[in-house]
Length: 182
Image (cartoon, rainbow, N blue to C red; front, top):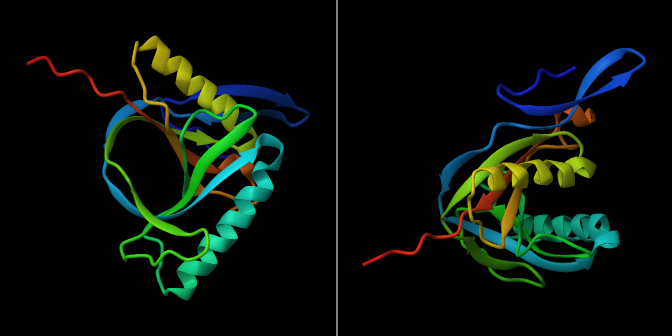
């Protein structure tokens, strides 16, 4: 069993062998997220087709970057324009240092700098909804106002471990800008 993150909010479940940690988020904190140059594919898809759309988009984005000899400068992420409901509207993104030539559905762009509420979710992707729920409860408890968009950065996933307890996803919710009084 992986050790829980320090200061983590977590749920425990029983198993025949004993207790194990599931669907963990670390204590949320506010950080400044820098502007990032990205290569991306915009995706709009019904909820029931999200897994297929993600795989297809990642494959296409990876193929174009490889053809252009551009290596990602960090983990891939999804930038959602709104909280998902029955459908998803988002970009599948890789941070890059080099300029990307648009090709097919692949575009060049940026993720703007933002002050965000950030946490690390531990567990399988099927539990991300509950991780986001915990993060939104924390945001509400702090009386913070957020923008409509959000992003998930996939730090450790199935490419690194078959044990979902070891998977880590960074959850980011940008804060709304405070009005300036002049």
